[in-house]
Image 1 (tube, rainbow, N blue to C red):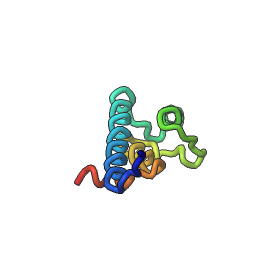
Image 2 (image 1 turned 180 degrees about the vertical axis):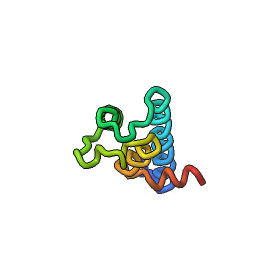
Image 3 (image 1 turned 60 degrees about the vertical axis):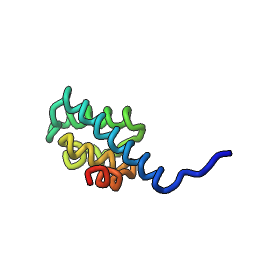
Image 4 (image 1 turned 120 degrees about the vertical axis):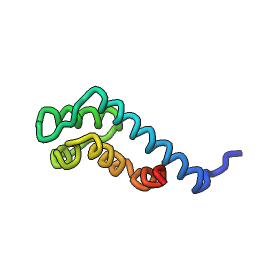
Amino acid sequence: MLRENTSEERRKESIMNALEVKKIIKEFAGIRKDAGKDEAALLEVALFVEETFGFVLTDEEISEYNLGTHEKTEKFVLKKLNMEEACVESVE
């Protein structure tokens, strides 16, 4: 018999997924410096995000504001994946 995930189980899964996102971006940061305003670097980060996390970015989303630093990229990806709350909860 299948049972539904409780809200606590779903919250734990989200936290784990948010931690995985953070780990993947940290690994990327180890091989790639922050993009800053460099358009070619921003496109490289955008391609990494699209290929790794499975969503397509709009031209407006490919910006220094969203992808200019690894911290901004992490925050942006968590927001796109609706994991912002899990990220905050994992720190507490």
